Amino acid sequence: MKRNTLGRCGLQVSEISFGASSLGGVFHDVDKTEALNTVHAALDAGINYFDVSPAYGATQAEKYLGAALKGVDRSRYILSTKAGKYTEPGSYGSDTFDYSRDRIHRSIDESMDRLGVDYLDIVYLHDFDYDGQRHADAALSEGFHSLVELKNAGRIGAIGAGIYAMDLWKRTLLETDVEVLLVHNHYCLNDIRATELLPLCRHLKVGIVNASPFASGLLTDRGPAAWHPADPEQRFIFSRAADHCREHGTSLQKVALQFSSQSDLFPTTMFSTARTASLQKNLEWYSQPVDYRLVAEIQAMLEPVMNLQWAY
Image (cartoon, rainbow, N blue to C red):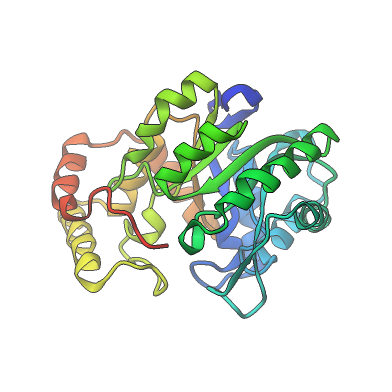
């Protein structure tokens, strides 16, 4: 699989990367054995970049990913996790946020223990745009300073951020020395606002990980999970697009994956799955050319929800 340079941090990441949120049961129930087999299949397919977070499944995703990577030569994979957002078992949707120095340092210790490593290639400050951005000031000051300390101590490689709000992305780029952005839901069939960040990122040599090609489930036949903020009318618009794809002998998720992953604007596109069959299907789609006429038809149907800011 082709590898590309991720900004000035210099990491050589596979063009398709593995988001481990599914290992935490974020989208549906997960079989542990199948989840571990999926990670191994990703490695065998040439995927070398894996991202996770302690918030995914209340640390379950980190535990499963750590179990899957146990015994795998460390040179075979690039690993990132996140800090600042935490979810307790059985309390999905009731997150806590803490970007203090003490909590960030403890979080990295705990994540490394669950993942079975003593070095993380990237650490992202996670979702500090939540709660109306009331955590932003703490994250942009003490939170990022804490990551700089960890980098200077040789415990982590690159400093990153993983958020959604576009205005806060611009503030983050202007106020911090961030090296990698994990941008989700902003370069997919229904939202291409990540392109707004490209000029400044290129100037600063900041790498962008393009995540969520399926728009958190909106661009799938199944549709998004119950927690997604899309209302019934908006969900219907996406279901019509899925029907249109079926009428053309394909699927909405196939076109969505191809559209996002085959752009040369970003070094890597990240999707998440805990099923080997799904992984193989996505890799097959990635290797086939996208039908841009069909893309245009889908985007015309999605115009009422194009570039809509979801209240995550």
